[in-house]
Image 1 (cartoon, helix red, strand yellow):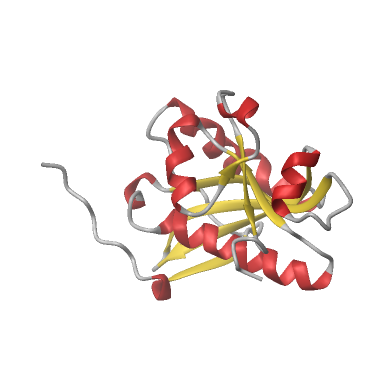
Image 2 (cartoon, rainbow, N blue to C red):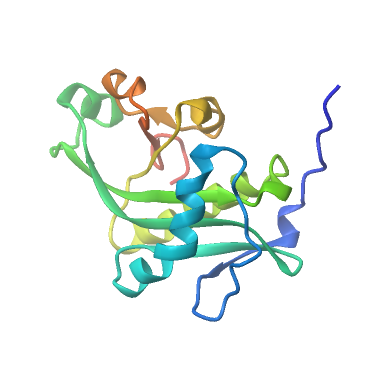
Length: 181
């Protein structure tokens, strides 16, 4: 029988923008080799990308610890005309404005406690605010094969069947069609 840790109430979590003075030395999201890239991105690249206006990294705080991080950036995704019809027949462009979840990682001590879901819901909140200011229709992410089912539970779909078998298939969440807007 495996142990399932208690979920952390969202009211006890906060998201703060990464700053120079944040101590990332105790953050560790590495459980397997696939986690190393996300860990290294936060430790070595995230702040630089942020300073270049390439992406924004936010830390998920729980009590006095960094429980996770999410990095988001502007994006657009080209769909086929058949996919566009499924989204909305009135859309006349194949390229759809998006917010991309570029990187996400949860501290290994906080896995399976709702941190990832909190960060993804925070990304939805940010996308909704952007949608009213500049127009954002979808949220995208490139995910690992082993996490497809997790993101599907959150409402994400594979962009097309050709990418499903790739190492990092692209998934999307439609803010309008999924009744968020």
